[in-house]
Length: 203
Image 1: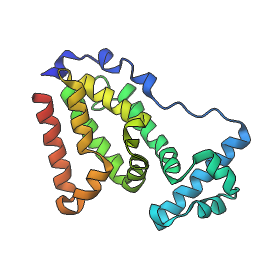
Image 2: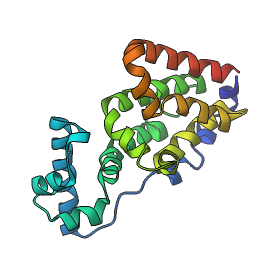
Image 3: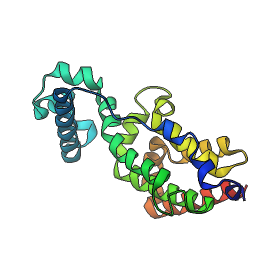
């Protein structure tokens, strides 16, 4: 199995460098950022991502529209910022958490745990992830988190890891999941993803 050739140390090589660093900003800028993200999170949860305007977010946060647009650009930028915290939690679990996600578990176990945990994250934030990944052509592949997930999976897969990592992540794309979820349902989506992960690891 490819995973048996990759010990805990080799799997973590370079991953720390791919993590999204926390923003460095003045105290007042940090307060504005926190207020904007809290307001956006509330409005998106209450009304849905598509129904909320940037004007509404600025009003809810008590900041000027110029401040909002300078900080985040558009709703896709807001989506990426809102997702950073959840992604950081998952990245931390991969780098130094306990089994089955963390480095002390066997490779095949970590692959299965990643697929399950990533689906948990994706389904909980599907609209936001979809917006962040489809803001422009190829946006998904420019997001720092994608490079982290890909590197992690490639190391675990071993042989042909780069291709296998892209193949698994393609099945976990938010646009794809949004399209097939109504037909498959969550249970079939999870079961199919688990089978795909195992098949790629065995191939």
